Length: 193
Image 1 (tube, rainbow, N blue to C red):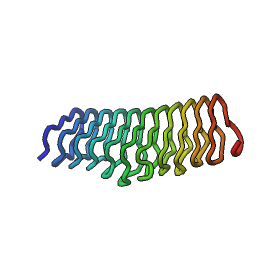
Image 2 (cartoon, rainbow, N blue to C red; image 1 turned 60 degrees about the vertical axis):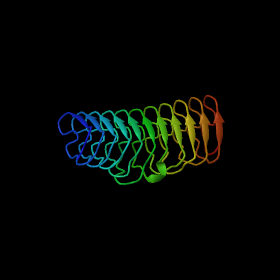
Image 3 (cartoon, rainbow, N blue to C red; image 1 turned 90 degrees about the vertical axis):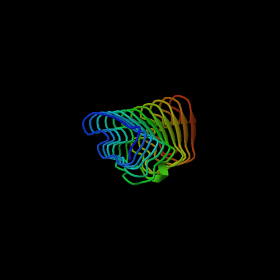
């Protein structure tokens, strides 16, 4: 039997069977949870499709909305944060903060991603070992990983591998692999640079 759960809002935690220590606040927040435990879902439909995931935090409208069975230890804060249709893909230990951040259809390769900022890592699907910090940082990255983009629109249009861009608009339109650009507008344009 389910124990130590708190549900406030129409439909919140409405499917719970044996899940313990969950907190849901908002319309249909965590409403599909059956056996997943220690989840916190706050906001309209936050974590609404999550069924068996554990130790997740979803705060904001539609945050962690479509994850179902294998999403564990994720933090999704902001409207539409980590809201892509990744259903049963095993996506774990991500920190996604910001409106529409990390909202692509995530695959297990995306586990461990850090995306902080408005639409940071927005298109992300399976890219591994990525850190995106800043407004629209890494917005176009889908499946190519090992990227670190820090700054306003850093690596905005880049979807390549092994790049490090630090600074306002650093590597913004760079389309090459294995580049390092540090400073405002460094490596901003062209193929490679």
